Image (cartoon, rainbow, N blue to C red; front, side):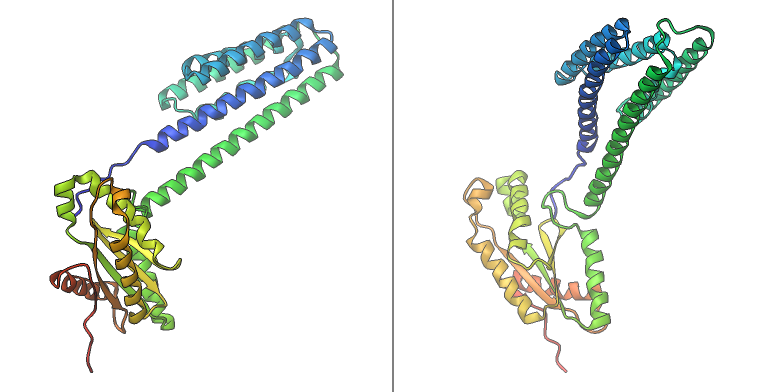
Length: 357
């Protein structure tokens, strides 16, 4: 009987948040580097006001980075929003819409979509950003740039801003794709792997067993099954506690595969019961593998794993696929052999009953 209650840890959400704030820190570093470049660029172009605005921008990004390091995330995001909104407006008003400073406002859209902000808040922020962008565009239809620069210099600034925004969009896209792929890998693992032992879970193990049976029917390759059960596991839980039982099961998740071949499949079948699928293996070889696992349990240093002296043994039932077998019938024979071993004193390996005739 399985006394272990598994719970879904919300680690994936925390990890996604951690990745987002890591990207935010990198964005602060990149933006500060861009503003340092702008400082020298606008001095060369004869626009000292814009040059010194970039000094203020670097200071804001440094403060935002420091806030992120101290996990003052709301303060950091507020500083980043302030810098981009004000800097884009000042750059546009000073040298014109053609400078491309307004492109930086668009970076907030993908950043909001991968952030941990609530959906309602995201919609409000996007609508507000759209309104600000439109207002800035309309404003530049009615006013002239305060400190215009030559058309060649304006083109250079435009291309520089466009390139930086393109690079940032690419980075955000790369981050988003990686985040999605990472989430997919974790979901696949949750669907196939037992969280305690790290072995395949029963559902996925059943699918793998069906695959091997289908291969047997196509090509006639032998397939053997081992059903293993930890002896007196309920007594271990009752006398030593469920935490001890969990530590033992975790250790078993490493001990059984270590005694088998790479192609052998180990499944946590339920509670303290484990199923092993042995492709291309007849009954005699399977019995030898089962004895090797049983002896490994008997000689294993359980005190190091469990934290106190304890003896852990297993009983094993072994069967081999036959013509007209299905998954249920071949595992059922291993199960009957297992319980003969239990009835015969435990800590032993039993094979399926031999069919005569």
